[in-house]
Length: 369
Image (cartoon, rainbow, N blue to C red; front, side, top):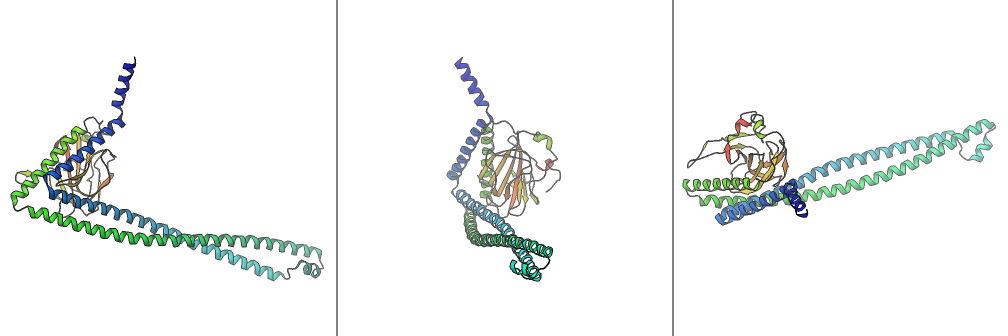
C-alpha cells in the first residue's frame, strides 16, 4: 500500500509542470555555462568580444534605467509644480475673500457690542446687526482656518518640489556618469573587434570563422532540443497554422535573405533586417524562451520555443527575457544592436522546424518588414 502510494506521488511529481520547468531551466543554465566554457577554450578573442559586448549591454541597461527614472522624475516634478501653483491660487482666493469680508465689516460700522447697543434705538435693527456680525465673525474664522490650511499645503508642495528638483539634478549627474561608462565599454568593444578582425588575414580565415560559428549554432540547437524534450509544448494555436499571418519582429530593410550565398559554400539560414539601434524586437508568436545569452557570430541571442518550431533573434543590444520565461506574440523581448561583431545594427532572424531552418518570409503577412 505504502509502496503504491509512493510510486503514485513520484509519478505525480514527474508530471508537475512547475517541477518540469525548474528542471528545464537548470538544464538550459548548465547549457549556457557550457557554451561559454567551450567558447573560452576555442577562441580567446571571441571571449574578449563577448565580455566587451556584455559590458556595453550592462552599461546600456543602466543608462536606460536612469533615463526611465529621469522621465518619471520629470513627470513628478510637473505634477508637484502644478500642485504648488494650485495651492498658491487657492491661498490667494482665500485672502481675497477675507479681504472682502473685512471691507464688508468696516462698511457696517462699529463692531463693539456696547457701542452697537448704545447706537441703535430700534431693537429689531440691533438684533439684525448682531446676527450680521456673528455671521461675519464665523466667516472670518473659517476663512482664516482655510488660509492656514492653504499655507500648510503650499509649504508642503514647495518642499516636495524642491526635493524632486534636487533628485532630478542627482539623476542627471548619474546618467552623465553612466553615459561615460557606456562610451568606455563601446571603446573596449571596438578594440576587441579590431583584434578579432586583425586575426582574419584572408578569405579562407573568414570562411573558417563562419563555419565555426555555424557549427556552434547547430550544436546549440541540438542541445536545446534535448534540454526541452520533457517540457510540455506551449499552449495556444499551433505555430504551423499561423504561417502567412505573422507580423515582422522589427521594421527595416532586408539586407540578407534566406538561401543567399555567404561564401565558402555557406548560405544564410535566416534573414538579416537592418534597423536602428534600440528598436524594439517583438516575439513572432506565443512560446517559451529556450535560450538568452551570448553566442559567437550572433552576439546576444534569444531563442523562443513555439512547440516544434523555434524562432531565433540575433545581434541584440539588450535581452529582456530569460530562459524559461513565457512570451506572447508581439511582446517586446529584446532591442536591436550590433552584438556578435557586426559593424552596424540589425536583427538576424531564423525560423526552424525542429533542427531544420526554413525560409522565414512566407510566414509573414508582408514579404518585407
